[in-house]
Amino acid sequence: MLGGRLLEGAAGNAGHIGHVVVEPEGRRCACGGQGCLEAEASGPSIRAAFGVDPAEAPDAVRARTGTLVGRGVASVANLLDLRLAVVAGSVALGFGDLFLAAAQAELDRRCRLDFSVGTRLTAARLGADAPLVGAAAVGWAGLGEL
Image (tube, rainbow, N blue to C red):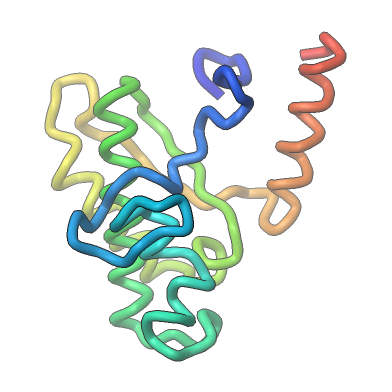
């Protein structure tokens, strides 16, 4: 959402920051890029890189993942003049306070412009239902209801 309106983009993918580069020398991404947020911080990438189910990831992996998410969100906040980012998904919601604290600390380090200082990151309050509600919002917008 931007300015109270659903931001869609030409192909409907606006707001998907999975392909923002957060580790320039990082893992190869399915998109063909390298070091994308999705290649570094998604459940499958955590499983592949660390050989552990994300639900059982050690604190160091949880903190690293939060830092990378914070780095990606900071890039977007600095680009689009955003003050709030809401994260969802099994990793973001499952990694809890350690993840959120690391992400916020990285935001604080990287959001240094007058308009981005103080940008906040929070977990989706709808929990695992957030993607379903988002999909419904897209549907309603397509019908002209939003």
